[in-house]
Image (cartoon, rainbow, N blue to C red; front, side, top):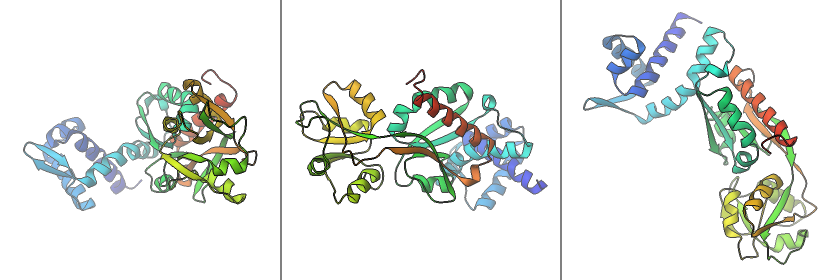
Amino acid sequence: MPHSDLGLLHDLRALSIMLEERNVTRAAGRFHLSQSSMSRTLQRLRALFGDELLVRTGGEYELTPRAREMQRELAQLLPRLERLVAGQGFDPSTASGVVRIIATDYTITTLGPHLLPKLFLAAPDLEVRVQQRDEGAFADLERGRADIAMSVLQPAAPLRWEQLFTDDVVCVVDRDHPVRDRFALADYAEARHVVVTLVHGEQPMIERWLQEFGHNRTAAVRVASFSSAFAALPGTTLLTTMPRRMAERQVAAHPWARLVEAPEEFDAFPYGMVWHARLESDPMHSWLRRMIRAAAEEMTSGGPRD
């Protein structure tokens, strides 16, 4: 790497400490620089980014909006840049920084117990940040705002998708609901629904299946997560539709609820992980994907946390 690039990496390390300390003198001490050298570093970075980054208020500094955004990004990028410069692989036991995973509560409830404890035990200084999935998930991957997303949807290049397991959907109703063991498609379409707003206010997979058979459905309630859908069901004829693994766990915790099979026209679906092609060979990301694969295998094989 050219010297100028190494100098920039040095300055970015210094900036990360300044943003954390919000004090040039303390940051200089931590970075083993004189205060005047740290001040010159700050001036170079202000000129480079066209932003004040730190604004003095009394004896301390406040971060500008741009600096707050950069602080989040630097926590993720600096460890990777340092590994690149050093030519080293990824050692989870000494890794720091932030891993950002986009997932619904379905993923956290079912896959999470097999994954999150193992990530902590393997990489105790690595922060795992789970972000709620929404319609901006794939854009966040493309812009580097997230590392991996869990999804039924299979995106186009440059994003990559890998299947982890399959599941199917079931309906959940109040135990006194008049339906028996399975909803016929016509009855399902005529019912009032509690819809989980995964993407653009809908559950795209369910809507697509209904449209294929010339139906749509009417929402009585829209909620942001599968677990919160249960709040609308007691004492009503409403129904909600969700993956079987999620429904079985939730019904076990809500004795007033019961499972009903979804229309037989609804298929099983593949569930996978999505990442950007630029991270394909990144050592940390390769390790993370291996951990997720292992967690999915343990879950589907009925491992200790299932």
